[in-house]
Length: 302
Ligand SMILES: *[C@@H]1O[C@H](CO)[C@@H](O)[C@H](O)[C@H]1NC(C)=O
Ligand SMILES: *[C@@H]1O[C@H](CO)[C@@H](O)[C@H](O)[C@H]1NC(C)=O
Ligand SMILES: *[C@@H]1O[C@H](CO)[C@@H](O)[C@H](O)[C@H]1NC(C)=O
Ligand SMILES: *[C@@H]1O[C@H](CO)[C@@H](O)[C@H](O)[C@H]1NC(C)=O
Ligand SMILES: *[C@@H]1O[C@H](CO)[C@@H](O)[C@H](O)[C@H]1NC(C)=O
Ligand SMILES: *[C@@H]1O[C@H](CO)[C@@H](O)[C@H](O)[C@H]1NC(C)=O
Image: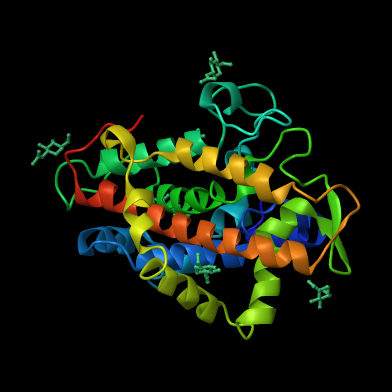
């Protein structure tokens, strides 16, 4: 049955939210924040390339379309992309190893979020390799940009690199204050929602500004190290995944056993982690896009 594109996407997203609320990436707010922060750190040349690639519906704003991969992942044409939003180390291994962990549930190698980040970086940087006006490819580079921007966000959400046995916290039922949910969703959405309500006047822009102030102030000394990739790589997702599983062990899984109620103690100690991961995702997305679109001579990716 053929259904017209927009209707289907809208419906699919609607059903998705109703039926399986726990499996989206950072929620829409998290992705919006990461991409908004990134946009502030793009070089002029990278910003121009991004704007050329954005779909018209974005209105020139990358943040507005950063959740697109979540909108389409359950639709028939994009089902192949669903396994690219995360990577799962074996249970209780608080470390990440690409060759051990980067595969889909059927064991096919190189099907995970870090492989996808390499993939879309290569598609974009190859198309852009010599002359700033060249953006040609057999791939859809608009999709490459949206997938890359989304997946660099996802890989910073600690439970997108959570254990395989609990599906990155999706199968750990917990209460967020009085509301029944699961641990993955707490980290995608609930901590951010509660922060918006409690500290930011329910305004995402205010929250983003507060994170941005830390980037130029409290975290200033660390920020340049967030940007660097070893060996002149254009993209380096593996260290981000290592940080995430380490944070998952130290903060996300800790004191969040099945059936537990998470409240003020958990919220107030984990929120700073969430805000810093949003900042790092944004800074690193910008750095990656700048390397792709500003330094055409560097082509080593993996
Ligand atoms: C990563 O996993 C591979 C495959 O399981 C293994 O051969 C390799 O020794 C591991 N590397 C490290 C650093 O543990
Ligand atoms: C790489 O991108 C292409 C085009 O979107 C896609 O078909 C393929 O599955 C991707 N592979 C990975 C590992 O991301
Ligand atoms: C850019 O790449 C294209 C395709 O490989 C090639 O034909 C063209 O000569 C290159 N231009 C420059 C300035 O290197
Ligand atoms: C590229 O992908 C976008 C988003 O799926 C789509 O709207 C657009 O039509 C595609 N472009 C081409 C040339 O297929
Ligand atoms: C619990 O759910 C209700 C209804 O969706 C919502 O209004 C409320 O803000 C939630 N509470 C918390 C702490 O997330
Ligand atoms: C800003 O940084 C301080 C010190 O690391 C931290 O306690 C605070 O939660 C951060 N605020 C935001 C909005 O990131």
